Image (cartoon, rainbow, N blue to C red; front, side, top):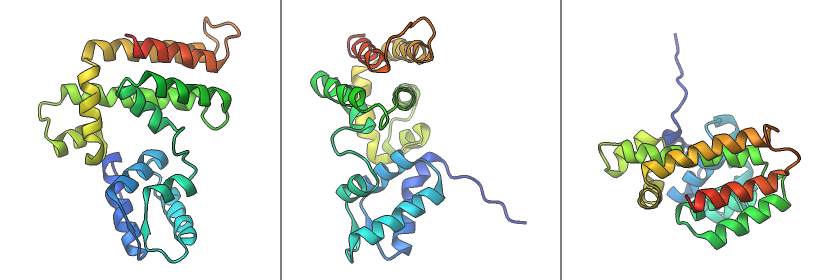
Length: 203
């Protein structure tokens, strides 16, 4: 009898590092964390992307963050991770710039995908607030993220207290319903995103 349990999200970066090492490659902690955040926990998909990276490295042995961004289709400046990062820092200019890019390119960044990632992001900040042990690895385990990203969540938690987070999660639910036509009329998703972003940044 063989039992193979699915890996938790916070275990994926470590798996990526071990897998790349088995392929004769190396990857930075930032690179593996970014890949895990973007690709999720589908190990088959991750292994396929690593094989693609290996071909594009053309003999190089180390996978850099730029390689992950260039060959796995993550825009360096206009992706959902940069978007949540800008919101987490309350960088109004950058967050609106990315939102405008999403609006102009809805097929690359559909509203439902952005909403799901925002919900995941703010839920993790709420978990950070609720964690009794704020040490790096304990918090990472509670939130299901790589320890590499804990400082970013810690910084965001100073801006978004639990009351604000509950309001924001309520906004996300409201705009998810609006995106499905509930009490929104013919409002386009880009306009909904800009409204939602304004409420988040000014709550």
